[in-house]
Image 1 (cartoon, rainbow, N blue to C red):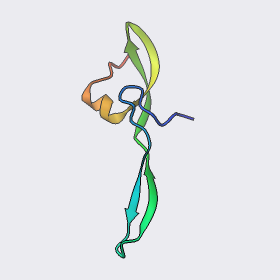
Image 2: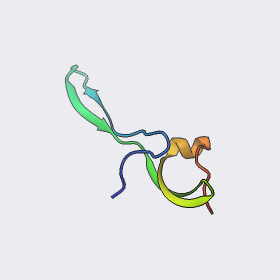
Image 3: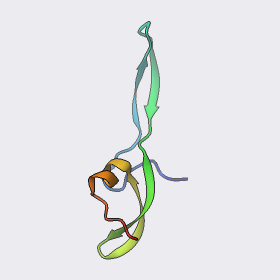
Image 4: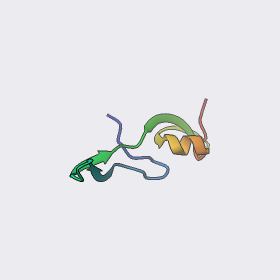
Length: 64
């Protein structure tokens, strides 16, 4: 199972309330979109967990 934390930015599970039309509050959690990718780190290829925001923004150099 993949840990739901980004190794680059540290983004993890967030908590909040789902608010209904009648203004009831229901506890809810949101998971980040985490992908297990091969990345080049300090000249070596490693598998890391990265969120899609970091992948899209170019913070991760993908290894091919």
